[in-house]
Length: 390
Image (cartoon, rainbow, N blue to C red; front, side, top):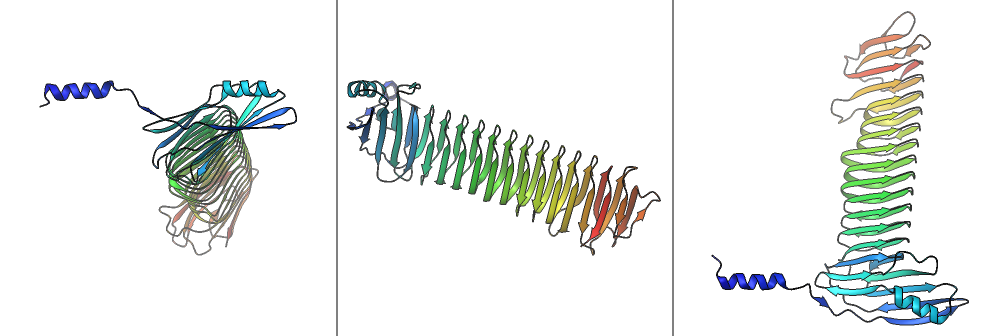
């Protein structure tokens, strides 16, 4: 049981304010460039490994990377004399403060009206978390380990050689990441997204209209979406599932492995050398699946389907379901495999098969088991159907 003395000590501790530690004084130097003035503001400071570095209400680009601690801000004042430039800097200079949690760099304004701008470069201990926001300007991260939250109103975001989870958003710029070990939560209003050499449990990346690309990565779950851009995946492995969707762009999947679902409102879908399970659909485009070992469900509202499957090794309960509203369907399968066929086409289409199955007189329906049966093969379209042996 706590004594009255214990409670008094606790109340005193809780009432203590957060202690702001001494922050370094900036060193400022000026140089003139025609009608413009540039100030270089430099801080030598001592961030501790494992702490948090925060940047708030900044306006300008930011480069944040591992190295010997140093913070440099370049201030650009446009079409002003020296006295006006000094007055602008005194008013707008970001303030660097320090407490027990780490450092905070806080700007004073979100709107320069073209009179001035900042560029920030900061070197931090390799093990350092960063939370940074800028109203406009690009952000770069390199070589850090921690947790990261990055936002910019209009610039691009680039990160590489990062260990830790990243949450990043931009109003319209691109997002690029390379060699990242951690979870990613990314969004851009209209720019493209490019990711490479990513490992982690979850990648969730969305763009309002740009394209998305992911290569040479291995994650548990991946969600990529775009309002209208193209999607490209190469050598991506998922232990759980990949979901990709676009409102109208093309989708390309190359040399990937796992359970993939892909959809586009009107674009084409091209798949090559996939291993696992595929569920793909397009509202109007064509579908091509080549040299793949997979279970396949594929549909298109109006386009053609051209499918070549090399087998079903280690695929649990494989099926083949192909459908098109009006397009032709060509399906190539290993000749020694066991299948149960159910093929159906409209009055304008015809069915041909290199496998020995029953086809009715008008060649609009074909069915039968071959090599003892096995994988269910269902094809429906108003166009022609052609089944070939590999």
